[in-house]
Length: 593
Figure 1 (tube, rainbow, N blue to C red):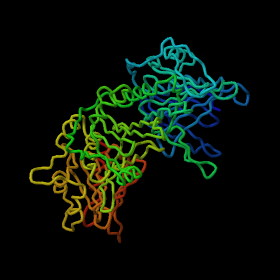
Figure 2: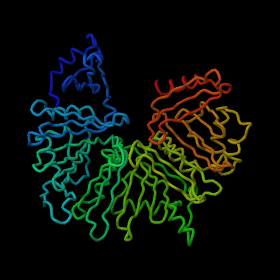
Figure 3: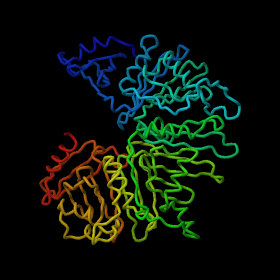
Figure 4: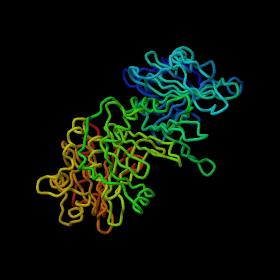
């Protein structure tokens, strides 16, 4: 168990002028803790873990964790018995090799809440204004728990919780406000202007309490699920984060979501789950939303399937385009599922389920159960989509496919959506995602107005129309020529986007634009099925090039990403057809300057 030590003394030992110059000039040590020979140092720039190894102690590891890599944190008070006498600091990262860091702190020899304050000051950023239309339940009297549904959270007076958690314990920052608060049996969850705070009371005596903080910036997606009929007494909120999950260690230690996926149950008779959804939408979607509209003629809107076609579509989840007018009115209606400045651009339906692309998010509506009263509304903000792919339907396929990738590592890392061939235009869907994920707001608002209009003298584009020149042996890796093809033959590129480098491997293309890597993967014997994977440059975390050996025909490029399903993308470059060091120079300029 670590005890708190003088941070100034540690700074003097590690300053740039010392024999062990670990700290940068001007870097300031704020808190330090020592456990045995090891030290934990909190500075204004990072967390440093100092691990002294070996009998002599001459081998020392200095591990730096940047504050930007820490996605959440928790502090846990000590219990009441002598066997449970230490408090604990828990840090949760988005680093796969270092998913979390735990540090026990010796009771009465470390200020736990000073540590909590220091971490909060690093991760939570500037103060945010409280939302105006939130029901804070001011003056609300807690009805306490009942035997029926007693574990489901009930509302509390947010102003009272704001007062309590600014004073004792001092969890909230000075300018931070509690906007919503709820309590189950003993646990409390608060939605503040900066984060979600989950208070978990443990043990028989309840003296050991964990305070978990999830900053709004760490949330990748969210959902609310209404209560079903009968004895289904709880509604539910679900939060997906960019923190790591527990990988498990075998049959008796299965993988667990841990902090990558959080759920909160609410009493359906006391809590308005749609008010929570509106609140989460405002906090997670941001203020800037482009006014985007697409002409209905571009969306291949069709009548519902009938008979066996309808049955097969429901079983397969193949969605067809629908008119957004009625759905917009419905979701802006009594329950206000959409924000005031949010509008549906395109929507698709399969059976009872619906997927809507708005100007802020992808909204997936999943109707469950026989009665259809239990409905889950899942939101994936465009700002949290780090990669996506659109795949055209092949000769024997009923559907085209869209995959969305996020930084969540649990069950929202890849969202897969199927669209019925001939009843949803995958080109327009791909175009929308390109504009919303890659483009600026002005581009997203204006570019899609003509996204479905082919240039004069050309036919309406289809995903498979690229096959002819992709499979042709006469196609050269000429960036200007392929730039023209990706505008004229199939309008994939944005208006301010242009090809800079192109490489072909068999039938596949690696297209590097000024905004992304576009990997075009031709599949099947006839090449009718084509997958278009977009990896924006911000999702690329590192790269390596390997020159060809004496007997090798090709050099290699290794592209490392933080896309969970595409961690490493390998590209081979024939020595006679390209210089691998050109790619090294290209990535250096794109990622480092």
